Image (cartoon, rainbow, N blue to C red; front, side, top):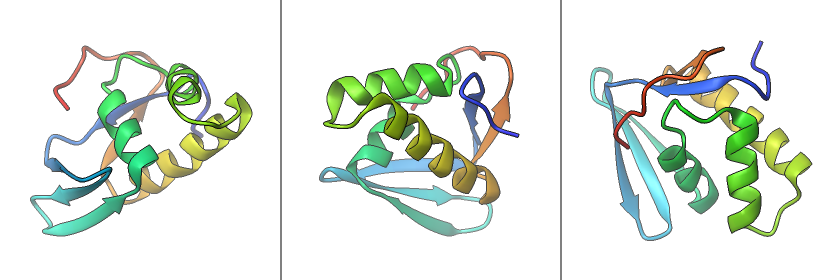
Length: 100
């Protein structure tokens, strides 16, 4: 199960593009598109495999008007959706930084 000390690893088959403040993800092998709001898009950029979910929550809290507890809960929820869709995997150890 995903925890605050888990790390998100982006699937190398997922392309990311910004559309204003929002973003679109494309899984190139399946041809599936996914949209992210501006907070989700920022999270995608920050999630480079070297920051835990708790680290990401701290960064999101600094940039957006949200409590740390709410940021952690929202990130865990989004991360579970991304994992379910095969866009990220979860690791219990940090990975080398991946390009966004």
